[in-house]
Length: 219
Image (cartoon, rainbow, N blue to C red; front, side, top):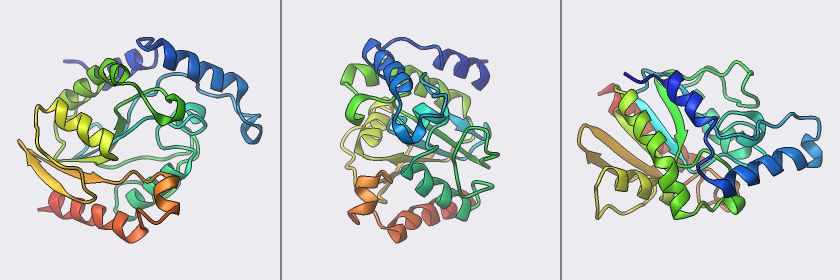
């Protein structure tokens, strides 16, 4: 049986998408002024969390100066701030911040992954890049046997997950839930700066998602 350790070792050395590999390497070299003293990760990112997770969170991709810098998904950017605070308040994380891969953050009964493992230019992966990366998500589905709830962040993650499950006709809407086989799928707006600063995703609406997740897992 394949383990997460074996899978993750394969993910971080992946070179399936030349455009993405070139982009993240360049970002890691050029950097931005505020992170000039950082040694950027600049490689594909593995998922992270509890191997016995009941909650699987699927995002879009690492941020160019977030995960691509720090070496951990949802770490070092505003989306990570929102996600970790919610996970901490809901009992899935031991702390409310995620600043670096060595900051002591631990997840309990939750695992975080994404449909794309490299930061894409303008946060827009191509269809082929999503296909190239889907094998890693499929492997995680097989390894994480205790998952009961799948939370997809954004319509692209939602559509990718439902397509991989060969399910059609489901519509993306914030905090909508669907039963797919033995798992509950919950859709949410992505906690991106664009969504949170414009009020498209409020903190109350965001926490409503995690209250629903808690009820399902506790039932």
